[in-house]
Length: 412
Image 1: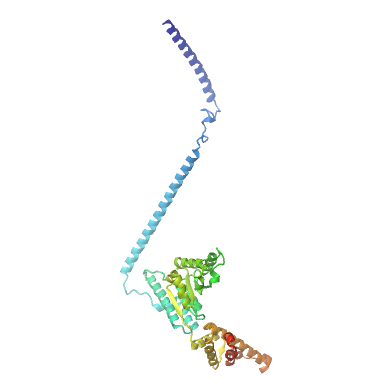
Image 2: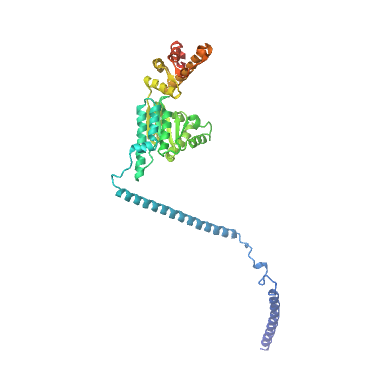
């Protein structure tokens, strides 16, 4: 019992001593921590966050950034959805207003005359030019007038508020060389421009060499470059069947065809594609590429000219070049045309143009020999001498056919 009391007294004494010592130490430390000028009274650098030693600490920041990005994407998607909904609502309102307007509009509301639209838009002028520039080709002119009529009536409907859609204006021109395919394409481009279906109305002529490359990666840029040039007008692909080679699956022309098909489908409001060539070959080409056939809404066949029509074409060419064909020269030229039509490689109006060029040259030789060599009339020639194409100028062409060897007659 006495031993326990002694031990208890010792513990109390020790605790009292420790309490006194700790109180003194705590007081000294507090005075040092909170003395003036100490920027961190609560401790040293151990209390500052340095990222820690956790290897996943960088992932926490990435997760936070990902959550913020997701919130931004959701906001953008919601804004886009709201805009689409608003646009759809505006379209519905406009359609309802249009329906109400159409229901309330009397049936006898004046829409203007067809002639007014034809002349006002300049369509009639282009059709008149077509009649002047192209002799014959009655079916072709009729087809062009039908297309023009559709465009005019479509514009009249649009003026009143009727529903309209851009018709398929892609075209196929089939026929022999020199039958006026390029001329009709130019006129159609101008008509489309006048009616607002084409921005520029120009015509870009292309062949396989312009569209197809010679190595991998070369075809697409060439085709797209030609399409870029033709945008806003008409792209006329002459002898289009050469784009496809059925005997070679690796031919690069197939890539060009695929690009053209895509443009014909997606850009038909800004580009008209016209393909041209011989009818039998074009029919075979369409059988290989049915997608091309289905995208073309206007097929126009150009018949061969008759001999009388070719004589009229020569008169038109002479008038455009400010020449005058003597009345007795027409019979000689008609005789030449009939003989030339029986030979290979006859090209309709192109053959007439070549013949007219040779007749002009013969006229120049005759005039030069008469006044410069022989010195008639003191060397002075008249205006009529400079404009005249005589029967003798055409007779040279006939003589070349009659006197040439059989193998060389095609060059006469």
